[in-house]
Amino acid sequence: MDRTVSTVPQRLRPRKTPIQTRSGATVDAIHEAVIQVLLAEGLTRLTTTRIAERAGVSVGTLYQYFPNKQALLFAILLRHFEEMAEAFERIGIDGSQRPLADLADSIADAYVSVKLARPDVTAALYRVAGAIDQFRLSTSVFKRLEAAVVRVLGNASDASFNDLERVAFTLLSALAGVSRGSFGKLVSGPEVLDRLRDEARILSGAYLRAASNV
Image (cartoon, rainbow, N blue to C red; front, side, top):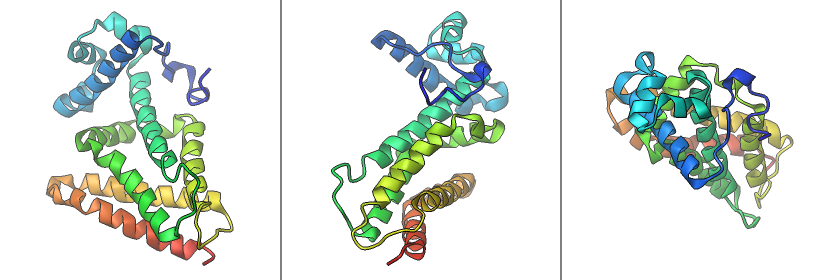
């Protein structure tokens, strides 16, 4: 069983994982349909019938993969966190050492790049996370995020840390806070997202300098 879902309650797990290209495309279409229905109708009008119609599949096909709406919402949140982990894992993949300031910017940029790749999707996911207990996702996906940041910080050429796991946890929590706050202020205008990358860099750099043994 995939370790990223093994600790999720049975009723929230996907019924099966797509193996063939065709089934993978079907699941992708269902995931995209969830986002589109959320944006167009809102969470209260999100139903499996509307999702299936938007995805161009039958409700029966949807239920082949997901036992209920909650399982589907958990699945799209899990995919988002996995995309975030992949973005961190691409930083300094060659293992070369770099100054802490550069690594701080890279971590901030990776985080923000996932959030801003499709701002509408991120906004929809925050609605989902606010309506369900996202921490019932597998702890392994959060550990994967922390492990990726720990590896990056371990390559700092000019600084060290007493507790890398604690530093990674705090930094990720802080970035999550500024991101959620920024998307929450979208009603005041899109310029708040234009500032997100700069603010994330400032936060990351300042915290990591303060937490390090320079």
